[in-house]
Image 1 (cartoon, rainbow, N blue to C red):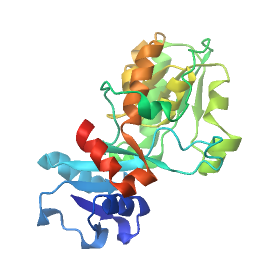
Image 2 (cartoon, rainbow, N blue to C red; image 1 turned 135 degrees about the vertical axis):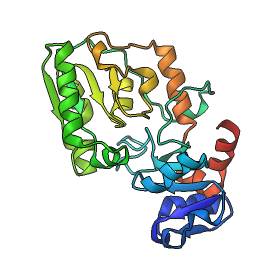
Image 3 (spheres, rainbow, N blue to C red; image 1 turned 90 degrees about the vertical axis):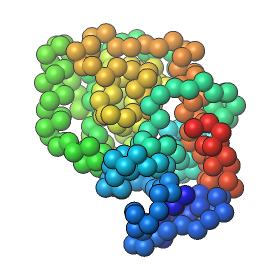
Length: 265
C-alpha cells in the first residue's frame, strides 16, 4: 500500500503507515504509474488521483473525518478529531453490512425516536470542496434543489450555511438546534449532517453519489412529502456498520485499523 501524505506531514496518514509497518510517501514524490499498489489518501482534494483510480479500477482507501465520536462529550470535552473513517474505493460508506454492535456500544450514542414532524425543509448547504470533486457548481445545484422541492411541496425552505469555524458548528450554531426549529426533513449533498439528522430523529434526503446516510433516507426529491422513517433496529444496524468503518488514532498507529479493514471490507 502507498500511504500518500501531503508534504509528508499528514499526521493521520503517517499514523496509519506506522501501524502498517511501512513508510509514507510525500505527495511531491508520488508517481501514480510507479506501481499498482492500493493508495491510501486523505482529503477530497485528491480528486485527480481518486478519479484515476476509478477509471483504472485500482483500489484505494479514502481517509476523512469519522461519522461520530468527534463531537463534544464527557469523554471528549474539546471535540477533538480522534475518529477517522476509512472507505475502500469510495468517499463514504453508503451501504449497510451486518456487524456486531461492540464498536458502536463503545460510543454510548443515542438513536433518538423520530421527532414530531415540523413544517419546514432544511437544506444543509454543502462545502465547496465536494461540489468541485463531483464537478457541480454550488449556485446551480442549490437553485435546482430549491426549485425541485418547490415543485412538490409548499413547505417553507431554509438554507443552512456551513459555519466556517468548526467550533461554531459544535457550540454556538449547532445542527441539533437547527433540527429542533420546526424541521420536517433535512436535504443535503454529501454532508455528514445527514448522518447526525438520522441519529437525531429527522428524516433525510441525500443527493450526492455517496453519502453514509443514503441507506436511511431517500434520494428522490419528488418524494419530499413522504420521507423514509427506518425503524430503530434498522438504524441500529446501520450505526453498527458505520462504527466498523471508522477508527481511533490509536487504532491507526497500532495496526488495528488495517486488521479490521481486511476482516470486514
